[in-house]
Image (cartoon, rainbow, N blue to C red; front, side, top):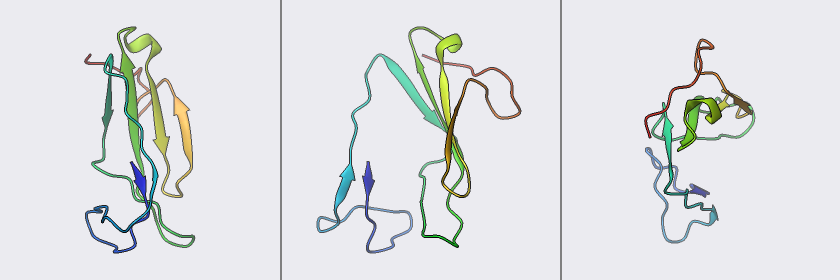
Length: 91
């Protein structure tokens, strides 16, 4: 879920009056894992949260992908884990 955290709670929590910008229900045939509990994107000049989100399905690690988010909020897609080893999946 992506929402505007007007209240600046930490950890973030969506209040009823805060706009929900996007919500997605993942497929049940796969698994999504991340090395962060949440990702926080901040205005320019402030550091955001970096981390990696890995997507695996029944096809296994050969078809797995990870989205790596930098401190600036820029995402990139990769087939490798941190330190460049191949991704692993536990489906």
